[in-house]
Image 1 (cartoon, rainbow, N blue to C red):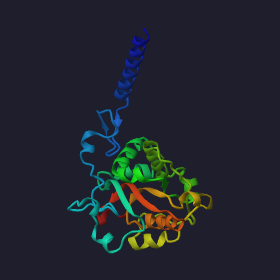
Image 2 (cartoon, rainbow, N blue to C red):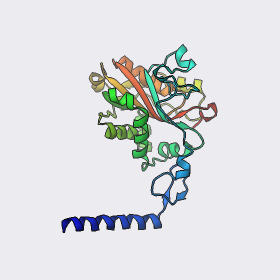
Image 3 (tube, rainbow, N blue to C red):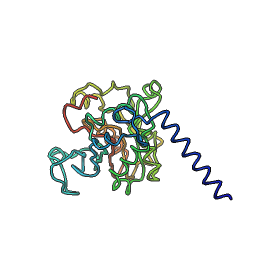
Image 4 (tube, rainbow, N blue to C red):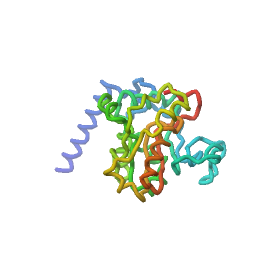
Length: 256
């Protein structure tokens, strides 16, 4: 009898979901259009997304024509390695993924976070296996108060739930209220975030000797990730991995 009642309840819930979907069809995270499917991304939109995963340059996640596994390096990283040790990206930032990323970054749309965390977990599986702590790129407190959220913190928490690795949201602090990176050239971005980040005094003991996974929403020029990595390195981090939701791969997409 109890089993039958459970089945009835499940069917009732399923009926309510179907009715709700009929009245309020799903709106795709990618295109913003209503669609007839159940998920958050319309099938035709999903097919247009460019997933990068763990291929490409192992130090900056830039797509490469040939994947040589752990030996894959782009020319830039081979000539001058970044301040972090390895990087992974779930998606290429392009015309298809742009709305998905900007709705999270600027509008605070949270309904895709579980999906994003799954993509990032898959892309950075090898880095997560060895990580001790997940640390997001921080906002300055003035911007955090004004905006009300830190999308990188949300992504870090999503990764923590998926992996079981603890996330420390306040390990890094932004010491000065730098202007938004949007609209700046690569040179201006690097100058803008120079010496902008530090490890909070109370968190230094957790960083020393630890393997850190640094999380951000978008890898554009690498300026912000580099400044954060320098702060973590100065605090004694043994290894710094980077994972982002999306990585800019075309120069024309730098301004976001």
